[in-house]
Image (cartoon, rainbow, N blue to C red; front, side):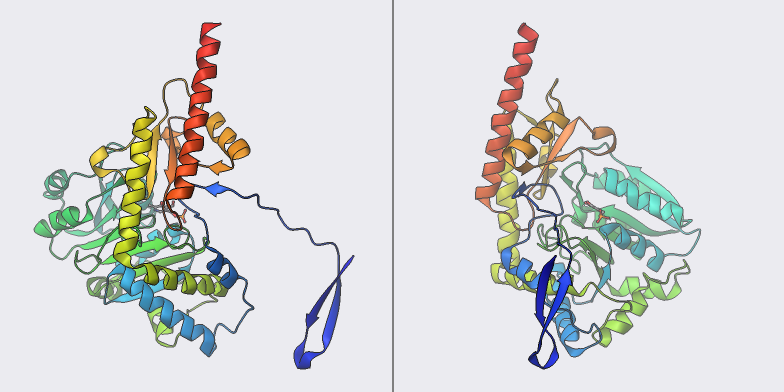
Length: 397
Ligand code: PLP
């Protein structure tokens, strides 16, 4: 039994007898997965603030400030909506807010998350023309343009900015141009879950209609918030769109936002954290953050090359937020990740779907700088060297 003493109203002290409280003891880790990402101390402190009324003036002030900062990072004059959700919720929100059953869309897919976006559209009864590229490569705008040429009455195109499963960044500017050339009024919805705030994606300048991201990626905040930018073409489509929606309704979210609220109870603590994280990000500056990610992406790729390892991604489109590395012949990826985690305190990610065991991924997005990234890469180099040594010994004996 322990005693928790807290101050109640009017200053009297209340003592609450509690059973022994146990908390998961999180070891210090060099978390180098492509999300969730590490949280800086000021954000952690903000997350621990006391609760407030989510319909009160303090929350309204936070929501308004956060929305304004997000506009700067989305590079948009238009609306920013937040939903308590994983990133996948934003994918579903994009589909149900823009389209009606049976409408024709195209999905440009280059990996697991592009496939997921296409699958969601199918689940909701849209006709989906998949324009798929081999995993590890970026989408070729010329191919996209050719493939779109014979799609009748195309209403929208779904695409991924940064394909986290393969470590590839699409040239969204060129893809959007290719779409607009043939279908000037098609809706363009971009999954920027693992890139927004890290890699330049100017929503308005590229004439994108819906762009979304997740709090656990570049934003230095825990998982739980999906953030969506909605432009004027998307709002016009939203007024016509007949797919059923309730929780995800953009119009309801916008009406609440005008009052400084969200339609349903928001994760207030995450907003405390996001509020502080965005102030830190504004202090660093958008272009400086993009430059830091470019530098860290280049550093990672160079170290991988020097280790004699191969990138999974086409080098010209390799991502600045996540690097996918091809596992050399005979390397047990599971054992490598286990040894790194348990013995070096470095946490990397494995491959997804058919890439399990074939690649591993290093996240370098959000709150990350040279020292911890270099430390992770040093550990990886030592571990790979050791494992290659023991494989050779086994082969020789
Ligand atoms: N899209 C991309 C590009 C992602 O990287 C992720 C998650 O890693 C998602 C969508 C889905 O996000 P969540 O896992 O939060 O649902």
